[in-house]
Image (cartoon, rainbow, N blue to C red; front, side):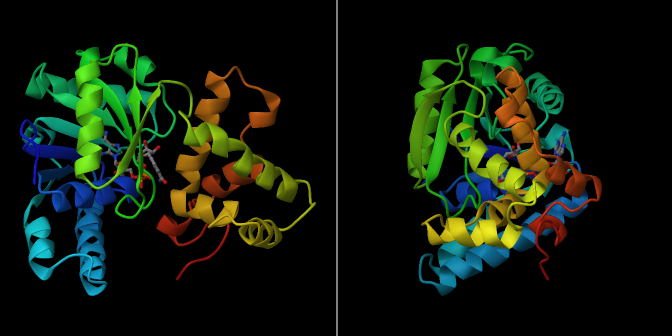
Length: 285
Ligand SMILES: NC(=O)c1ccc[n+]([C@@H]2O[C@H](COP(=O)([O-])OP(=O)(O)OC[C@H]3O[C@@H](n4cnc5c(N)ncnc54)[C@H](O)[C@@H]3O)[C@@H](O)[C@H]2O)c1
C-alpha cells in the first residue's frame, strides 16, 4: 500500500544499494522508476531483484502474487528526463559533486515540491543542501546492506530540511517494514561513525603484520559480530567503504586514528572492490 502523497518513487543508482531499495519500495506498493547512467547496471539490477524476490517467495515470506506485483511495478531507465515522481531516493556513487549535480537536474525537471532522500553513508546532508535549488526538500534516508533484509534506516535531519519531510520519510520507512531512527546531520551519522574504528583498526592490524585477514575475521565473529570486518567491507564494496572513511576523516578534521588505510586503497587501485567484482580481501565465485 503506497502512502497518500507518494505515488512514484524514483530510485537513482542501480548498484548494490539502489537495486535493493527499488525492491523494498516496489514490495511496499509503490510504482518505482530505477535510474542509472549505466544500462548494464540496470539489467543486473532487474536480474538481482527478481532473484531476491523469488527467494522471499521460496521462504514463504511473500506470495507469488506479491512477487509478480512488485516486479511489474518497477521500470528501468537511463534517461534522466523520464525521472518524474514525488520522491527520489538516491543511491549513486559516494561523491558530493555527483550528488549535487544529479539533484539540481532532478529539481529542475520536477519542480520545488520534489522530495529527495539521499542514501549517502557519510556525506553531510547540509553540505549537499547548500548547493541545491531547494534545500528544505533534501533529507537523508540511509538504508543498510542488503536493503531488503536489514531493518535499520537512519533518517537524517539536516538544518535546512523541512521537519514535515523528515516525519514523512520516517513514516515511509515504517511502511517499508523498516525501523527508522531520526538523527541529526554529522559526518558518518550514527552507524558509520561508530563503525569506523572497527574497519580501520582491523586493517591497521593486518597492515602492521600483527594478524592475518582470516584471523581478524574469525576472532571478531567468535566474539559475536555477525560478520568479520574484512568480509563486511567486501560486501559493502571497498570503494564505497574507503570513500566513507575518507569523508568522515576529512570532515572531522583529519584525526590520525581515523586515517583511511593504505591496504584498502591498494585493492581499489587494482580494481578489487569486493563481492561486486568477485575479488576484494577474499575471492568469490
Ligand atoms: N554499499 C553499501 O553497503 C552501502 C550501504 C549504505 C549506503 N550506501 C551508499 O549508497 C550509495 C550507493 O552505494 P552502492 O554500494 O550501491 O554503490 P555501487 O557502486 O554499487 O552503485 C552505484 C551506482 O550508481 C551509478 N551512478 C553513478 N553516478 C551516477 C549518476 N550521476 N546518475 C545515475 N547513476 C549513477 C553507477 O553506475 C552504479 O550503478 C553511496 O552513496 C553509498 O555510500 C552504500
